[in-house]
View (cartoon, rainbow, N blue to C red):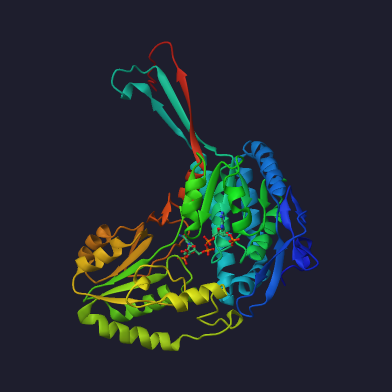
Length: 467
Ligand SMILES: NC(=O)C1=CN([C@@H]2O[C@H](COP(=O)(O)OP(=O)(O)OC[C@H]3O[C@@H](n4cnc5c(N)ncnc54)[C@H](OP(=O)(O)O)[C@@H]3O)[C@@H](O)[C@H]2O)C=CC1
Ligand SMILES: O=C(O)[C@H](O)COP(=O)(O)O
């Protein structure tokens, strides 16, 4: 059970503690932030409202801890990550339970999120050993006018302190997708979890604590983003921000200083359906893509652009499947569970007007507009007129058409004959336009959380290795 057994250390009475300097602590603010269970609409957990002084302290210790962590052998960093991954998977039950209570994720999917997160951490450890273990060697005489008198050695070095801010919908997975690459690359990590999802994150962080990472290397400060968010993102001690969420990310990128940013923001993923598509396959993917976790996925199918001649048949197939979706509590693995907050529910209900905003905005709920198109160009035009550009998908049996349409869609990824999805977690994942900056996915995140350092050996005379 959450907060018991191995996890009792992270709980103080009714409130969860925050994590700093290798210890679980109560905030000096004396203030607690309530976490509402979306199903009962009652306060289910409470977390600390950390102060600016506590953030300052965390940044200080993160900076110190990073210096010695960067000198820790790569194999040892990987070993600790593997250990954390296995503890995480071993203790999936209490973490999944928190996900169910905090964000109403269906119980089975909650377990999947934790297991997927453990796998991500292990894969990241292995990938880090491979890609950080090698650098480049360049010689100068390949550039016109130069003799072979310069040997240039390049390697990837850590950035310093990485600030990780995940969203509510995958609090554990989207936290470890930032934590693991940061750590394997020799950075320290400050996590600000989403308020809804904070307790799941605190349990996950405890797994890293139990794995034995050095003090101060990982910290987790809780509190409302609206209260401590700006202080964190504009903190001079932060050397990189990895953020996943909504428009908040656009504001952060305008306020952040001269530091690398990884922004994974919203999407309005379009599903283009041609006349020759397998409509049963399309309908199944629309259901999976549009309604899993009640549509609260950045990669959810958010608008269907279907050729008029097959639109009625597709809508009929989709409707039949929608009618079979179960609505109920996450504990019972219902297909449609309560959305994360009352304001989110109100937004979904009040703002959806079939003629206007739903065609462009992200409802983040189980709502799906279907627009009939008369040409492929019309579909591409609608897709590209969006200010988002995360993913999109196209359904057709004609691979040549699929490639042409995919190339024309202004999105970070196009899926052919399947709904949009971020995973598997080692695939590159990126949005263009308002959907993000940079690219995620294990390899890209490791690279993004490093910088290149070069050392040039200057020789007095040209030298050629002859074997
Ligand atoms: N492209 C992608 O990979 C993904 C994108 N998303 C997008 O995320 C959105 C839904 O997630 P949601 O959690 O509601 O997103 P939000 O942008 O509201 O919040 C994301 C995170 O930012 C924090 N935050 C809030 N205000 C600030 C601030 N001023 N400074 C720093 N951090 C702040 C939040 O904390 P707190 O909870 O305390 O407010 C939370 O941890 C959707 O738009 C969705 O498309 C979601 C998942 C993946
Ligand atoms: O938050 C999201 O929506 C995720 O990044 C999407 O992940 P998924 O495609 O694996 O559900």
